[in-house]
Image (cartoon, rainbow, N blue to C red; front, top):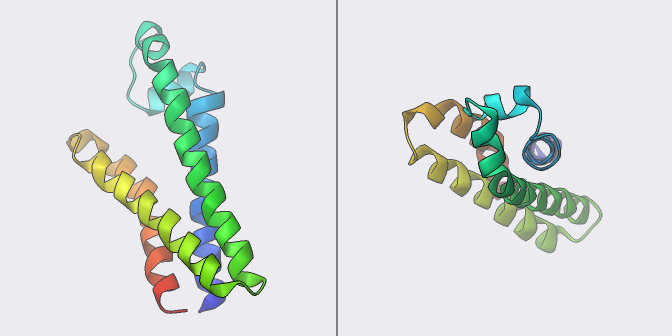
Length: 126
């Protein structure tokens, strides 16, 4: 079960790294900002600083989960588990907050929150 938990948390970390890339590095591409429901270039430029900042939150959560995995798998099990649980819990909480912004965000919230939730639950039992 440890391997499954580690793979799921690793995938959640990679997903949040990808979200970072979209929000902070590739935001100027119309294909990217359209994925976030933005309909025109002017609006995308207006919210670009917010997306940039938000992307870094995702990066930090992903890196934190990855570092937690490394710690857990290399012998610092308590510290690693604590970091994994904190980061995946924060990912799930962020997805829950996203749900409160409207029905149009259900798919995004499920995408953002499902892997971290599964990883969190699995890490409770390893």
